[in-house]
Length: 458
Length: 62
Image (cartoon, rainbow over all chains, first blue to last red; front, side, top):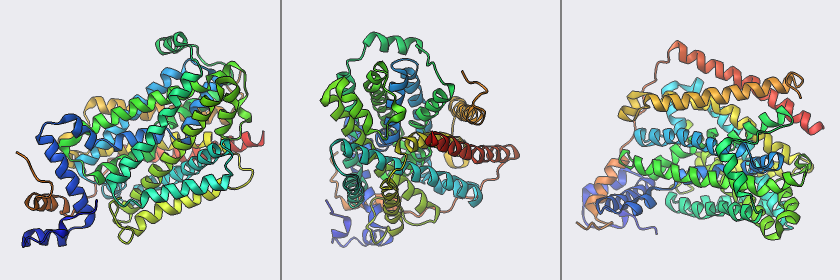
């Protein structure tokens, strides 16, 4: 629907002045706000939640991306059902704690994350934060196309065709030029992430083992400590990454959420976290038959090899669902991560940034998303690239980059000048601080045992 | 009360609210402890990335 107030011709000069002073994106957002206002005044709470949901669900389901699903599957294939089942749930609790702060920052300030870092801390720290984001986003975007390409290979599609289709869909989504439509289209796509649940059921999981793992965090993983720590980092990186903070805060602002919408913003984030956690555990469970069959996943070239290896163990339906899930995971994340880069870049250089913009108004905003997508797509097509190793490594890098990103988030969310009464309390600071310390320590431990593998070897 | 979503009066007031330009926020003065922590984490990242790259190439070589 493209009916805007400029269609009005009622002689209202105040209205016309307002229209001239503001942009199409503001008008579109205003219409959305109007609908929300009406729904709230009628007391239709489920409808209100439906209208305000989106950024939280998308950021959580978007983070269940190609490398994340490969990390969960690798964990399931390496260790089966055990310690990592409750650990994955814990990582989503961490994700909720972090993302709730991003929502609060967005509704309190009406500004994106990059914009706030630059304005409050200056360009020196701003460019460091942006460098972390760009490195993390570009590498992760490459792995999303690895997932799309790998899923396509399972169905016999040549790499170039899968990658081209993926690029076409990412660009087509941007072509919607309307935040609300883009968001709803992506939420439909995100429902595809749930394919991992029937895939897990087709693996005939042992319910008692699952309950035992949840209750006791056992059995504990054995074998190489380096692999164990790598998977710890990869699983954290599968859930908590810098792009999520930048994306959700900017999306909250683009959607036009206000302070009054904070409860629904939190609920949206919690729903996303619960759904994504269930899918994460389902992916581990779906790949657990590979552990029982002693399949060596280190020899796998990509995420689709999990589907191929699972076929004789769980049947072709389960394997097909797994491969479709991998494609969906890559595609959804390619859309959200490229948009996260666009928001951050445009905010950094004070260019206009909204999915409500026309292409002519948002050349930099849309250009950044398209260029980063083209770059990632081209990297994937390089023959002989070690795709599975890249995928696992990207999650580790994302985790290492998370500590400074979290510190910026904590500093901003404790800034009472901009947050007012929405600033962090001591409980949120304790939770956020603990996450920074935990991530930094695990990362440091990873570094030590990588450089000195014999130090703790067994 | 039923409101028409295309009510121009309501739209005009909402437009004014959202169309209002956002001024630049003042720069915040960071304390010594905060700067030290930011530098420490920067060093942490700069040391960690080469280690991850080393682990990656080692894994690929095997």
